[in-house]
Image (cartoon, rainbow, N blue to C red; front, top):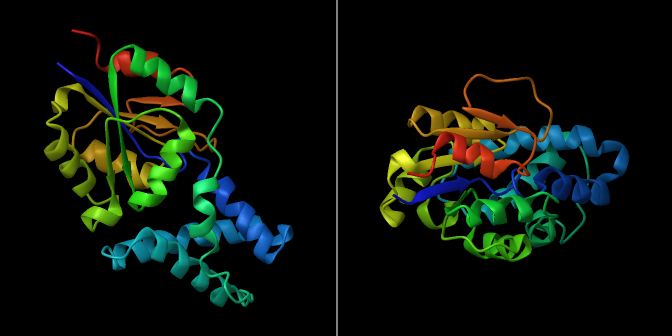
Length: 221
């Protein structure tokens, strides 16, 4: 039986907060970046749930415009698309390439289930430097996690056996909770030092020890 590990990308493999924070600091000043980042994360899922058919590029743009409007800040002309333009350059966490490579060497097939667009994810996969066997993006399926469609399309496209599948992600809201509801074993990558949670099967602070965690959930048969 093939063993599959699916991943969220931004926040788990790519430094989502770091990429957004850099642009918020550039646009509005470093003294506001932390507060604005919190506000941004409140806006984005609301936009996604109310407009599941819009591209992630549009979500990023709408969220940035709303953030500026709601906080009384001025967004300079031509800067509404700043987040979308910067996304391909968002940094990859240092532990990602060796962690994913080790998992592949142990026979795991890798997939990404992402709330983004094809061209943006492809740029990030290039930056990751590790090949993936499958990738599902919101821009092609008209749905954003935590809705279940990413996992449904994943099974349709890969034919993966659910008993050999583990989902790996940083976001409890977008990934761990819905995957758990679907009966999929989960590994929570708690990069933000959040309080412990009982929903994931395994909790890690990064992906350096990912291969061991995956093997503990689905041993080689």
